[in-house]
Length: 148
Image (tube, rainbow, N blue to C red; front, top):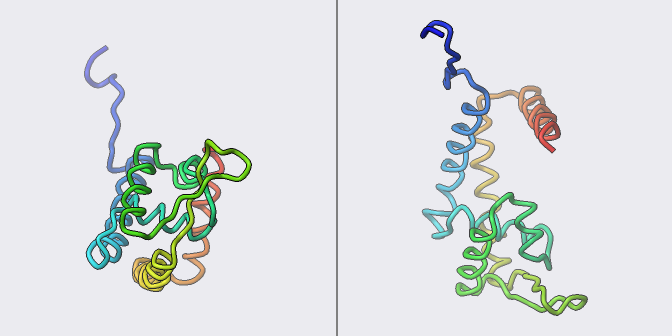
């Protein structure tokens, strides 16, 4: 097989690579809010937001929802507990499993950050009209379902 016959991959046009780069860019763009202003890592923010959305949730469920690994979730929980944003409680049905909840301080932090990240999201999408934004979101859902 000569060099002309070898398979090649142009990362600039390879969708999974492009999407990965875009996801990282978006994550960094949104992180400007919670990292610089509040000192939270991406994993801490994701855990905080997930707990706020689900309330009384276990680490395994956080991992499934956020797609973070066990170590990332565990470290985020430890840091958020140390900052008094989360409280851990024993699961009433399974004493070996713990559930986490937001503390009043954690809830206040979440409520303060949400409008800011929503504004950042709007700035991010401002180059698209409403129809394009809707199409983009529906296409993302469609591609995501392909992966499940």
